[in-house]
Length: 277
Image 1: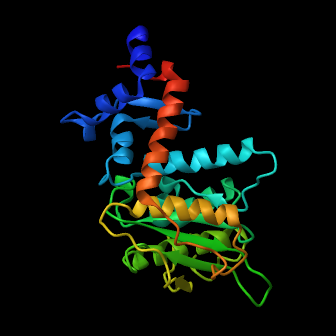
Image 2: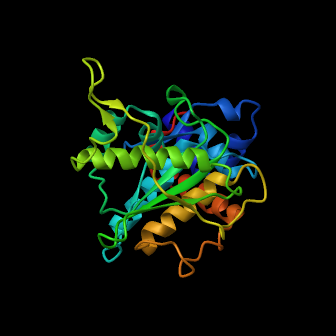
């Protein structure tokens, strides 16, 4: 097996042919890369990247976020100005128990003073992780002063399709942040023997769904827009409002697919022992 996969990895044309020419490539769970013991990229995930109509899933998105963080760590003078949140973590924060969500925010050291970007998926079932059919991006920017509170901005590449899901996520995380600050009693009910910690839904947050945003031209590039915009935002360092100083309109989905495929291919070749045919 070792000599076989070394031969395969040595020829990128062979790899691409093996990857793309199979009737079962979408369902193939063969692990091609175990990136930093954090993300396992399968053959089916890489197929989603290199096919022009591949819908980007949570595994590819999380790989891209981890890769972006790793590159920033490798560059001495480059420091990310915000946090990229794993799409599965974001999904749990949106649909999980509010007290569990608050604890997770604490574990991640996320609070109201941080800039962070969360992928929003339209899957509503927590047990299904992040399936759905559309991604958008929710951005939390910290308060500027006591009079200018933290801001929730929503960027959607398909008009405002994901607004209800983004609103729910922002609401849940805002509650979790307040709980961790010791200011959550006004929306947590503590009446009755079995009601301690029961959620009170009379709580709202203001969501700014941005208008002048790049729009996808098909039904499958939404994840690319989320990845590209989230990485740009944590590089750029939005202080509060995402305004005209931040250029969102230079996204090249086809170019992203080629570049990301080449990057994963390089890592597979560089760490070929991870791959078994």
